[in-house]
Amino acid sequence: MDAAADSCRSGRLCARCALRPAVASSAPGGDASCPFAPLAQPLRPLARGERLHAAGEESIGVVLVVDGALKSVSFAPDGQEQVLAFHLPGELLGLDALAAGRQGSDVVALSPSIVCHFSVEALLSKAAARAASQARLARAIGESAARDQPQVELLLRRQAAERIARFLHRLLARMQPPGESLVELTLPMSREDIARHIGLALETVSRGFTRLQDDGVIRVLGRHIEIREPDVLAKRARRT
Amino acid sequence: MDAAADSCRSGRLCARCALRPAVASSAPGGDASCPFAPLAQPLRPLARGERLHAAGEESIGVVLVVDGALKSVSFAPDGQEQVLAFHLPGELLGLDALAAGRQGSDVVALSPSIVCHFSVEALLSKAAARAASQARLARAIGESAARDQPQVELLLRRQAAERIARFLHRLLARMQPPGESLVELTLPMSREDIARHIGLALETVSRGFTRLQDDGVIRVLGRHIEIREPDVLAKRARRT
DNA sequence: CGGACCTTTGAGAGCAGTCAATGCTGGTGG
DNA sequence: CCACCAGCATTGACTGCTCTCAAAGGTCCG
Image 1 (cartoon, rainbow over the protein chains, first blue to last red):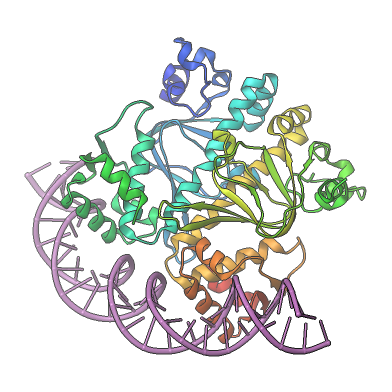
Image 2 (image 1 turned 90 degrees about the vertical axis):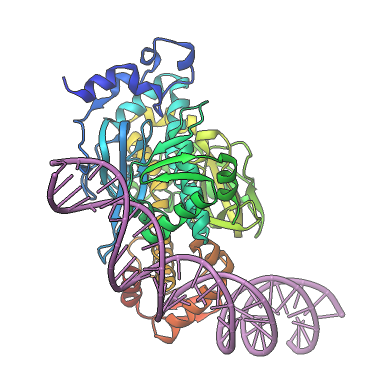
């Protein structure tokens, strides 16, 4: 029994899972109340830098991140790497591969990661049984489908400072458990990854972080970030 | 009986529908072979500039474009309009609203348009009955989910000329029926809409079109575009 | 403990944005 | 049917932001 299987059978998976039932909180048992939990197929743990799959490979269904962090990357014909998305614990990925049956991008672990996957057919069949399951699945699909919108909105903003503030603000929201409020975090990705994700040069990203620090909004120590003025950060994420 | 209902019951809907069965071509009867066709709910025809729905409104399920063209827009806090996507005949929209149950953006008709919508619950129920239906629905969901990726890839390219070439190239691919090859098209959207969609100033878009015309790649007459060198356009869409 | 990789900082050039004005097109009403 | 008008598209000049190139300092992993 490997770590993934272990995690997928503990409450750990369900705690922040995109497929989690709305009633989970009322059932302290945890994943016992999630009809999708038995469908989870563990995958082996990924080391930092290891590839979950490559673009063009056959789809393995929908993937759920249990722990760690990953990035989806594609390569432009000139060889430039583009970071399409970061994937954090509790999030689904691979939905786009349902169309062609093939992965649209490489997915690489940024830190040691644990993931599992679900067969789409199994999910649809299971969901058909109960209305509540249908709604939950539809919601999970929608969440995954909607995740790109903020990224497009971010990229449509032309000021570098605003893109950087938005990126930080959004990452913060995704990393903090519901109800809590993070004051510090450690970025799982490099400045270069960030730059290739928000369409800037890595130096511009670095300068943006420095600027936010000089203004007292955050405190930067390499990848360790302390949020000193969450309200100011939120404001800069909204305005130019 | 209004035009939408009429269209939804004719073969017109199914001809390019994202939900179309793979076997449609072998069944000249058309929509008779599509299990989802009876689920289509017609909506009234939209005039140019008319709004299908506003951000924040309750989701009406998944919407299928039958004819015309629409745009999804969101407004930044500073009032700037951002064009998140264009929607062409045969394409699904509204999938993102499944998560929150509310629309994430305004959707506005660019030209007189005919649309219909499907209840997500009905689609899932119907799909459960047959494996083939499941696969088709999964594929349609995936297509919709995957549509943002090329847009993100486009926005991650920093050269204006490349963004413009990519936009044109991609729009061309979406507008031409499978198997055919368009040599001319009429853009349903303004230069400003294009600019707000690919993150440039409208003057930059105009200059980009002019440049492509000066180089003999296309011929421009306002919104009427003639493709003179499809290969060159494709090349410029890939390289800097 | 060593070294590779990452991050920061500086200087200069180029490309796209902004402001401004003219020309065109398509639609409307006389 | 034609003239007019409003919105849209094009073009020009100039500013400024971000990219590129370059080098030094820092961090973390093996």
